[in-house]
Length: 416
Image (cartoon, rainbow, N blue to C red; front, top):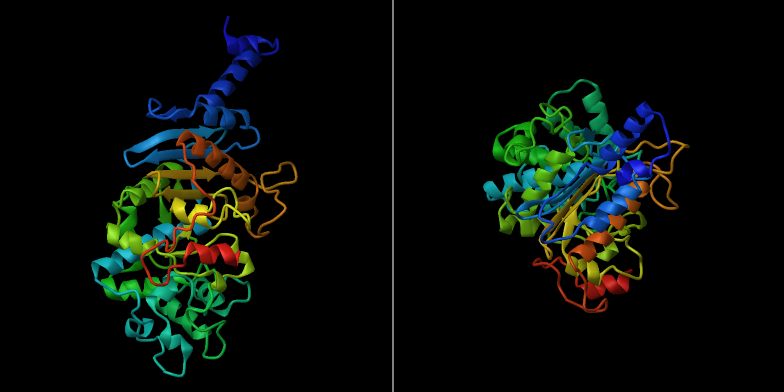
């Protein structure tokens, strides 16, 4: 009489029991809290029906009170610890800005005023680099290109067994030279997973603590992410922009803490979410993701198609987050007061299409393949669930944030 059993083909008793167990394993691992307010049934049906396609997935959606919807399937559980790649940047920079805020450090402080090995020569453009430039990837000194001298210097320093973070950060600086940087500071946004090392070196001086202690004091411990979550080599040479491994359950704690200003006060959070880049500063590889803040993007859902919905929809949505190369996606939504946290575990191979995509980076295909498709589809369901619409795609809300460097949405509209 069971509708589940009646739908199964006639198998022997052992095979039948296995099939039933698998159905409950895939479909039953969904916890929906607060469904009296929101109906997640259609989203759950989508995830169940595409489990073979989008398996190995752990997802939470919540608001300031906590988790509203939780889902995981196939071989994934909320406690599986995975590397986050660039998903490390948001927690790392949160720790840095919390440190700077506690010590009342201005973001326009020059690096040369903090680090004694940073040049202060007036004819050297590097002397004008500030904390703001480092935190917003606009130093003009470093990139993620394979031939980047500063990034290579860090890798060589760490591979040679060095244990002094400041020494390796200095070697990164010395690998650049006046006249051989990419641009003057503040001219171009150049994405890098290594640039935050300089901000970390500054934080060590300011806080009189190791960077491992700073990451633990300002993020990992207060968010309740330990012991599962930590940076590789956290006691000596953590790579802030790419070295964090964590579980979906503990990442949920971080993203929820960012929504509720648990880790940093509201003033600091507003500074952290202020747009630091304008369209003229972005290259073809970074234009896709939109404007950058301090360690987080202004997130644009459903892909950033170059006619819409960017810019005005995304500016008004006020979503902030930072994806990672292995398919990790997250954001906080300041308008709806919700957060999104999706950690997949996909392996690329010719036998699946987890990493297939007509566009994107060959260096991190998971980010652009199945993970991106599922991410955008889930968020279309969430738009319906939370009844989220805009009155006009062409509405111009003017300045998005509170800083003079912020960009009017009309300028984004004409620049894309």
